[in-house]
Image 1 (cartoon, rainbow, N blue to C red):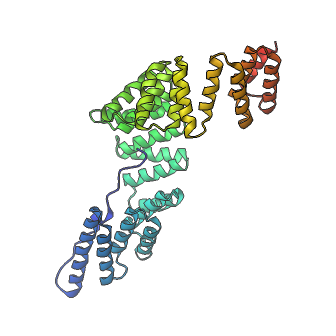
Image 2 (cartoon, rainbow, N blue to C red):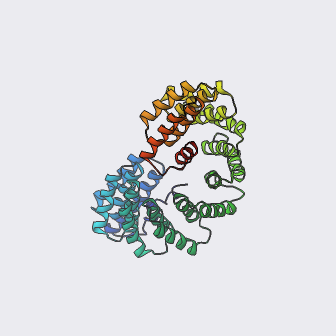
Image 3 (cartoon, rainbow, N blue to C red):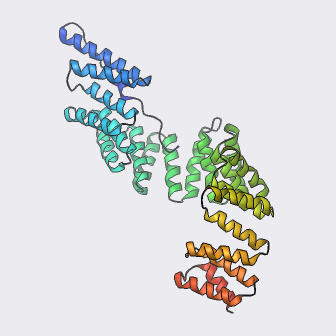
Length: 383
């Protein structure tokens, strides 16, 4: 959903009508046939055949704009963006207003994450076709990528003025607001897309709506959309993750475990999910399973949350010495992590080492005196 639909290949519109008769017209007729052939081969993914057809045109007419755009499209389709740019630029040096060269050139810069350059080229295109919805949406997308909220929003809204229910503009507005943490607004636009295509919803729209509800903590509403997404694809990662996280948010850890494990059936070495599942098992009191999952995660690569989980298991089992040792070790590696100080201080209190807890928290306050969790705990201990 991050990208617009593929643009129509320019060559489908670049087959001119020619008169026949003299030698010159015979040449233009041959160019027309080669152009048709080249774009058909390009459509069929025969890159070498397409390239050969377009190069044959240049043998007949040097610097032919159809051939140069065709060669640019051929290279762009193979992700050879730098080479494609050289063809488009060559075409534009002879035909500065060629819209197809401008379109292809802008798409190359977009693919190279050079969004300001892409915007400049698309703006030139719009000078000749100011109501081209596809191009306006492209420019709005590019402004979104460079975090220019106002220009991006204004252009998406311009598209909606031209076409009230344009899906790409609605989806773009959803992403724009989501990126800026305006979750209610994102939900509004994505819900409009869902309502328009209610009978055949895009799974990406369903998971996007679900994610808005996750962010807004309306977890029960989020589950409906994630479940609907699973009806289309029972192995969709985002739907499975969303459901697991929603049930975690509703403190229904037993249900979240089901979905964490469904992800692990597909991706057994995902250490983030192993840690999440470990947390769920720990919360439900299944310490053996939790330890198994945390250790699996750590065997893949170090994970701070899995390491914290093992320390919390020790703490939950009343093994405060071991828990304190683990938290101290983690603090040495991550001295600004406030959570570690709070958990270690709690271990010290359980071990009747109140002064050690106070000293520990005071040390953290020297690093960061604004952390509310640490300050509140310290105030309770020093009353």
